Length: 78
Length: 232
Image (cartoon, helix red, strand yellow):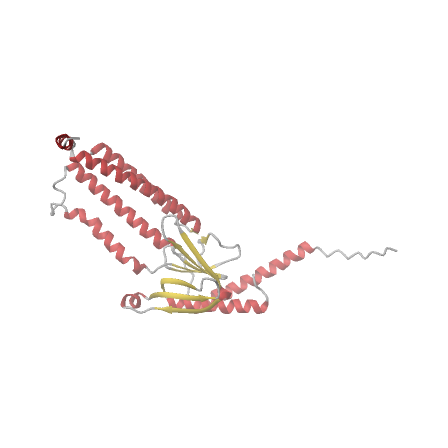
């Protein structure tokens, strides 16, 4: 590809569109992380059973839900 | 006349073993009561606070490998003071977006990106706090009337549970020192055992001297049980 064409392609691409893609990719990874946290919590709850097991489980799901919410918001707003 | 000797049937062997078990259980319960009394004399009182770092004789807490007759004597976590660093960091991080009105750090971004950036910031703070809390809450040290257990979670799905029977404990020491540790009365308890893994270490637990006393009491009780032939 001649250098002029490459420059044209770069100029056509909006920097904020690239930023949006990067943000969405990062949030997708974060959603995977929050899902792993849910798995971790279930393993931990099996190891030690106390009255706090249910609230901790709920918080882990809220964390997961919040991550999905931010992803959807980023998808719409950005 | 029959040549074969027929042994007399035991008188309700089932009932006798059940009563034997009951007596054994009563003995164990009474020995546990003795332990509770002696702990009370040492100033260790039963606690039920689930977020405590030093919970004696907890009632509503169980662990995965706990046996039916096994009773938790002490449940320990790292002292609350060890959480100050990440709690302080969280507070600063949570307040940081408020300073953005004075600092033009995000001004180069369109407003929609600023909004999403702040949401991502708080999402990450939530993740960080939750992870730190889980690490504190579930990395526990458990002392039962039969063994000492150290539960460690290293990563998201990896855990290590090391344990040693009370009868295998050879030496118990604790180390304190340092301004912070002296003020808040916490330190490390090192348990030397005869098992494959030589040392079980309880790190930064509250009242280490009390913990050592409790373990020594359990060792004495275990020796007494051995003499009386009440080994589970």
